[in-house]
Structures are given as C-alpha cells and as structure tokens.
Length: 328
Ligand SMILES: NC(=O)c1ccc[n+]([C@@H]2O[C@H](COP(=O)([O-])OP(=O)(O)OC[C@H]3O[C@@H](n4cnc5c(N)ncnc54)[C@H](O)[C@@H]3O)[C@@H](O)[C@H]2O)c1
Image 1 (spheres, rainbow, N blue to C red):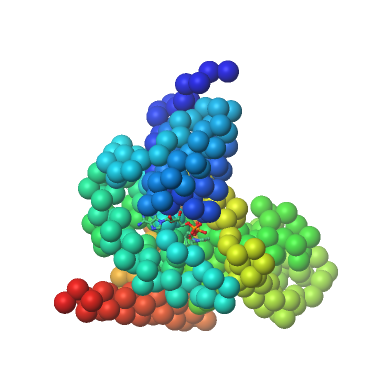
Image 2: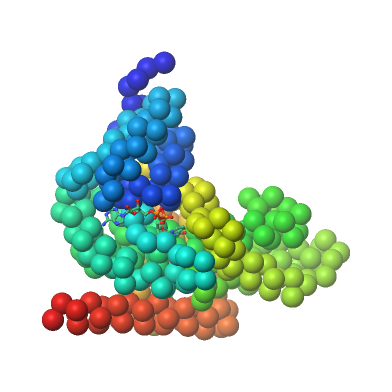
C-alpha cells in the first residue's frame, strides 16, 4: 500500500479543521474515510489534544491515503480548499444554541481574520453554534463574498426531517424530498407545501397510498426533528456523528464542483429581512453556495421564514452591540 496522499478529483485538496474537539475530529475521521481530501490540518487552542487526535487519525489515514497534521499557526490555512470551523463551547443539557453566542462570537473575532489573511480564496464552512449568527459573523470578519461563507445550518435538521418522514411512511429517507429552512434552532421551519415522496406531494401520496394525511403525526415529526439535538445532548452530552456526515456532504460538492443542492446557511435578504444568515436550499460548487432560484413558499411559510430571520437578526444586533460596548 502506498503512503503517498492520493489527490482527490485529480488535484491536491487541503482541508483545515479549526477545533479538534468532538465535532472536529469526528468530521476529520469522516473526511478521511470519504477520500475527498489529500491533506487534513487540525488547529486547536489545545495543541496537545490536537496532536493526540492527529496521531490517532493518521493511523486511520494509512488506509485512506491522506496526510493528517497539526498546525499551531493559521499560516497553515494557505492554499486550503476549505476551512471548517468547529471550535467553540458546546450546549449543556437544557441550554439553547443561542446561549453560546457571546463566547463563540469572541472566538470568531480572534480566529476568522487570521484564516482570511492566510487563505483569502478559501471557502469557510461554519459548524460552531449558534451557526446562523456565527456564519454572519464569519462573513463580516472575513470580508469574503457571501457565497464563500457557508453555515452547516439546517442541513442537519433536513437530514433528521427526512429520516423521521421516512420512518413514518415506511420509505427510504433518500426517496423523501423535504427541507427544513430558516434558523438551525427553535424557529426552524418545515416546508410542508413542497415535501414529496416519489414525486408526489405528501397529501397526494397519502391519497394514492389509500391512507389518511395525519396532520397531528406531521406535527410530531416536526417536533421530533426540532428536538432531536436536545434529546441526544440530554442522553450523551453532545452530537457529533450526524453533523460530521453533514459537513462532509457540504464539502463534497465543493471539492467535486458538482452543483448539488444542499440546504445550508448563507448570508442574504430573506422576506425583506437582512442581511442575515439562515438556511435555504443552495447550489454548491467550487465557488461556494448559490441561491439562484428562490424557493416557492406559501404565505404561511413566508411568514414563518420572516419570523425566523427577525429572530436571528435580533441576536446578531445584540451581540454586536454588547461587543462594541465592551470594547469602548
Ligand atoms: N452545526 C451543528 O449542527 C452542530 C452540531 C454539534 C455541535 N455543534 C457546535 O460545534 C461546536 C463544537 O462542539 P464540540 O462538541 O466539538 O465541542 P468540544 O468542546 O468537544 O470541542 C471544541 C474545541 O474547540 C477548541 N477551541 C476552543 N477555543 C478555540 C480557539 N480559540 N481556537 C481553536 N480551537 C479552540 C477546544 O479546545 C475544543 O477542542 C459547538 O459550538 C457546538 O454547539 C454544531
């Protein structure tokens, strides 16, 4: 077996992961197994831990043909195709994602300008929570175009939603087309009007299947989707596998330039509110995340999206205000 890193898609792909904690290293492992990257760099304030993780990962890398190393300096971001930020404090049982905002915003102020300085052409992928607020922060702190700052957003919730719908209807989640948009948090929004199985909207699918469309059951699906992270954190103290897989699914169309549509968070104007980052289906390719075609929403969904955007916008403004006050 060769020890040479194998170039992904014909060229050498370097990915930097900032934050070698639970999400960071699970993502590194998923990435190694995906074969998408030929070089993986871990940066963490706890360098000792990062070294331990990198050594362990590099033993897995032996099978995956990628080089894994630790860097103590953001100069290591130079030439990276993408920099994934997973550094920051995590939710404790009972906390919302928004409770983390002050600490993690400060971290972004320290880290993002350094990444932007050394890797001005990279794509930033943000996983740290609250992910929409921090995607907006990363956009402002980097000075990058909005296409090149992507939050994992509701890609995770969309996966959970499809999983729940698949279970309920007895269909493989791959064949359920349905999205969660808006905040990766409590104001997220299932787009019921567009949810479909085998090309049929859910109500039509139920008619064809000779079953009743059960509104209450669908509310339960949405509630379980929204509450999944809380439940997992209550039981095991963190979430890591789902988000790691989602981060790889965001990176893949970027590396392969494949125009895949993934529901991710990105800065824009939503129902007249903005600039704010929230999730909508985006086309992903080597240039980043594009929202070329507005999603067809009904009036109720538009209202829900506006409420979600206003909520995120409020947190962005309050965190910027308290940051300005603490600096004056
Ligand atoms: N977007 C999602 O779907 C999703 C899912 C799960 C977790 N998260 C978020 O991801 C973040 C990380 O979660 P985790 O479980 O990996 O936490 P963790 O505590 O296991 O890891 C965080 C890591 O960040 C490092 N770190 C802290 N400050 C740093 C700095 N200034 N520079 C570099 N590294 C620094 C820590 O040393 C630690 O290794 C949290 O904000 C969490 O809420 C997001």
